[in-house]
Image (cartoon, rainbow, N blue to C red):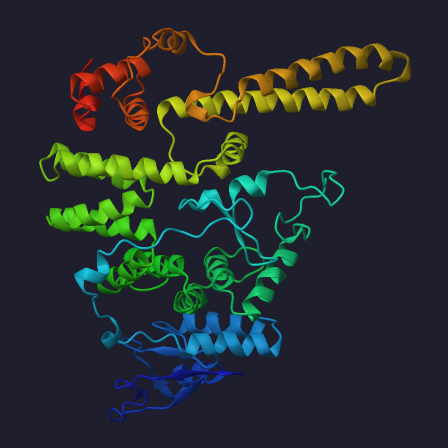
Length: 479
């Protein structure tokens, strides 16, 4: 039976017969613990540190250490992978000397934008629901390209779902998916190592649930450039997930993740500084996060402006920066993916955009129903098939014609959909010819998205406030 190494000195290990206390330091085997307790010694486990003999993971109780060592024994991995995992666990040591705070110049430097999608070459959204990691080739693609149909070299649509980049079929089982991640682990893919840490945390895809191994994998992925891994480590220390809560370590890893471009970590730093009363530092964090597309940070800047901790110019700069980011990532195909499912949402929509998304989703459902009914018609009895098919073909034609007439690639906010009565009233309020002269079109769209007003009303507000964006927004909200 493998042993659990007892690293602490057992000062209260005494003979049951009443002899004097005896100090004992050494290795205690699992099979011998019962004999020690029943025949020779009484062990006070207070302040005892138990350490796994395989991976040197430390535990405060014998039961947890025994359970973890059993997991190490049960894990069936090739020797090379097992050796690598054990090496990661052994090297997971965080010294206080490593927890050095970066300089303000490094901390508040605007990180570079995220990489482009390797298929559509548009900037990848910062929201995790807008990205998909492909374990077959190690590429991160946008939700729009993942949702889009795949065609073969002859132009025929591939029915079997495949990777849009390398064209390998999508795994159909958890075992196959887990093996794909192990293959990427073998080539030191930081994204795969980070995902495997998440799988160990949740117990998905055949990975044993272990916070210790999750932290070890995140640490390795972070050292290889995965800023999401640093944010996961920070969350673990911040909320006490698998480790004791340690705000100093959580803050350290939030800073590492934020400097690498993780908007969630940057937002958490801003909120923490606000709670501490450091409004200037909080504003800097939220400005950086807003430029990277964090809508929650934009809301925080609005509150700072209302409370007098941010100027109107700073709030206006945040608004413009956020909409510049939206322009960079926005595409028709990503909009269609978001309309298909909330799993593909890639930025926070305004009220008017949510209505358009809802309308697009209804149209997609209508198209599906028509296609489903057409398939059912083909399977209908032969005597009624001819008449039924004629009727359903007309239904399919009308449904498809309706979809392509309503959804235009010009953008969701201006999509030509059948409007509700309130929307029709907004459409009727059209700008007079020449009224938009001297007013930036981009400013009009920002005012419309922030207040859900008509274009004509946004133009009037901007003219009334001499093209001051913040004052125009306030005027539209008061009306």
